[in-house]
Amino acid sequence: MSYLQSEWKGRLKLWKDTLMQDLYIPLGKIPLEGFMTMEHLSSQDAMKGDFKPVPDGTHWGHTYEYCWLRAEVELTKEAENKRIVMDLNTGGEATVFVDGAAFGTYRVDWVTAPHQRISDNLLTASGREGERFDLLIEAYAGHYFPESPQANCATGPVLPGSYLDPLKEGKRRVMEGCTFGIWNEEAYQLYMDVDTLEQLLQELDPDSLRADKVAKALTEYTLLADFEQPLNQRIVSYRLAREALHGVMSAHNGSTAPVFYAVGNAHLALAWLWPMAETHRKTARTFAGQLRMLKQYPEYKFLQSQPASYEMCREHYPELFLRIKEAIKEGRWIAEGAMWVEPDTNMTSGESLIRQLLFGKRYFREEFGIDSVLLWLPDTFGYSAALPQILNGCGVKYLVTQKIFWSYNEGDRFPNHYFTWQGSDGSQIDTFLPTSYTYRPDPCEISQTWKKRVQKQDLDAFLFPFGYGDGGGGP
Image 1 (cartoon, rainbow, N blue to C red):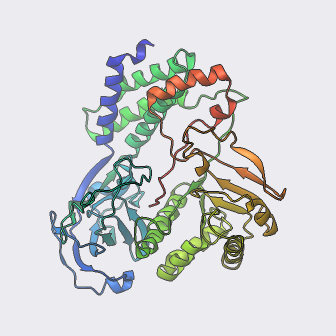
Image 2: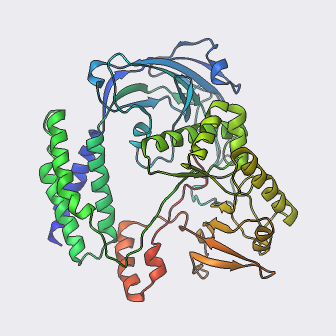
Image 3: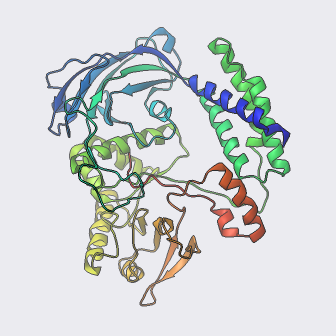
């Protein structure tokens, strides 16, 4: 395909990198005041703290320590009618409050697209000059945990001194500066179109007409997006470029192609690489952010399991918990999962699993008025053969999981994604495995695998090509 020879591939990369630089336009700095504490404070109690100026470049933080920061954001004339976001570089993962309400988070790790740290922190979709926002941030200095260079939860022999904390106590983090500014939605939507089409092109048969049309549209976009103009003219060119991509973006494969549905979910490990106090905070960071997503995107729905995490939120962030209950009543927030937490099902006893269901289903019913009929286990390492029998007896009709695809060690791959699982006593449960959890193949592997699939007519692999997961963490 002449359109994607090396020259065009390099051009597409350069255009995409330049487009990313235009996603966020800072308007002003956010001056911070703060204080340190080891205590788990409410936002109300934190406001009584001894705040002092925290200039950019300040090093801070001992292990397990928190820095509470406050500031006021006042929008300038340039913000008028613009989409205004924040870039909060406090150095650590943070819980954010705006005007006294839980707002969300600022992530410092596992973010594959760095601009997501900024786009998620939306203050207003249409700014007004002089509009003010009270900002409160609880930033975490973090703690050290050893990770094997082999990853994948590798364990084995460890030489003395192999794992040492590289950070200096008292200076684990650094304030790199916080700003507010314009989120260039036109540039972002064009970026998303281009990124989607590039990923699609990796999956398509390179000799197909569809691939040729996608490649041609991408090259045309590079002729229309004019970066060397003032902002208003750039935006006009971005709109023209999106129009050029519209045809291939709106194309459908045909009447026999599957229709895919998606629902948001935050797999929040309650006890993993952080103290339980961090889990409490992560409920606020995760849940508040999802409520804002629901508000911005009316078609979006979000599923959250684990009554234990809801109860943490209710105890530490009661105002946020009430907002969640309203979203559940509206049918936007799906409270499901059946069990109190997402447990292992092999090592524990049958009585323990029944108690998980008893306490979990009772919580969903009493707090949210929901009869939970779906067991949600995205990160479970094992599956007891008694599980279908236990689920049947507790009124659970469906099971969703996926980690069975994680590792085979040269064994036979599990063949199904949607099936009826029959347990050891003959009990049955409808089961769905949506993805392969962690598999992220490179583009070359994808293109080679595509032809093999077509030759083998592997319909299941074609419908569910490559799954992904968060590695067991959560925001």
